[in-house]
Length: 114
Length: 114
Image (cartoon, rainbow over all chains, first blue to last red; front, side, top):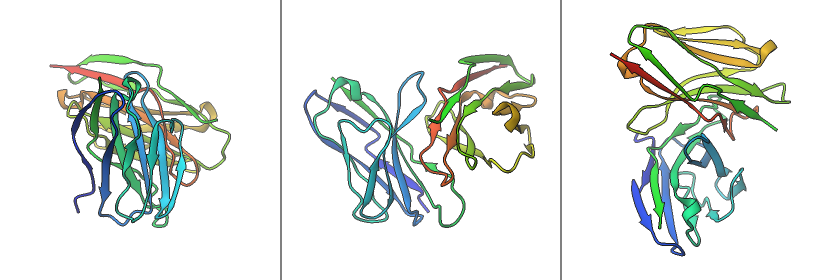
């Protein structure tokens, strides 16, 4: 298993540009989520999904969109990038039906918005 | 609302010293999960342990041990005989009963010097 994969690893955007961060998992996990990591603040939940076709907002959803058309993929869209969205983004997945309830994280995407 | 506090921003120790990382949490849920993750300089998030709220047994895994005390809402992590490879940022996290929607502490930077 590749686990949770994220692309790209690094990205530089200009203010106002849009882009999509990709996340995929091959563990057939129902639950997927996106977090952002900022210095001194730990990780904060942006959006999450409990299964294909179902998404919901986390703690800091503004400026981001998500969709979940398949179990494997959970892309994060930045509609109009702002410098405040400069951060490291992590995708995670877990399986609650199998009782593990442990979220496994991808390698992260470092995003800089100029 | 759930909250996790890691009061120690940064700890420096000399190799072979024991070190304890503190984690205090707040939740109104009776069923919840606590986690520790390690983030080495390479940036990925490595799962270390998960503990549910009904299991207060301490756990030992090699040089790592965890002390869960519901009476003080703490879930502390001790590294015995620290090594340079233990240098990392350590995050404590809390989730609801599903194990999803993690709330992270701000993290503790551990520096182990040789």
